[in-house]
Length: 118
Image (cartoon, rainbow, N blue to C red; front, side, top):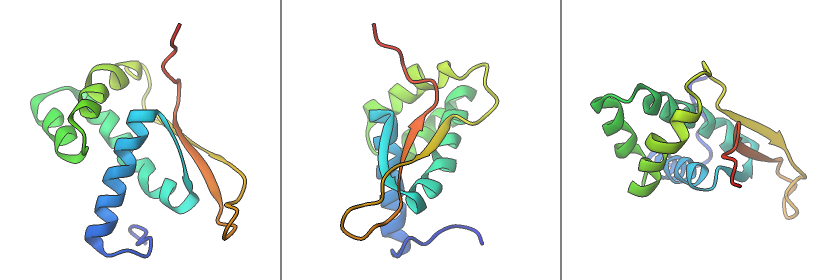
């Protein structure tokens, strides 16, 4: 099976996934179709794992993949340290109402244990 093509060329698919992973870390929750969320989830988990690792190579991998430097810094400095005691499962997919125009199954992809702001 490998991966989902999402009806795009390889370069368009890669750009879409990079943009969506960046948006997920920037907003900590995004609403998207179920197929896209299932494609984004393992990539986002890998970014957090690299952030937890914290060595130079892992940091460069995060900066290389994410499209916004400030979001990459946020992953390394704020998001990854939240999951030091967790072995995986950093994101969750929750079903939402179908999209109005074409009834595509929509989901909310979010980080587990959201950042608590007082």
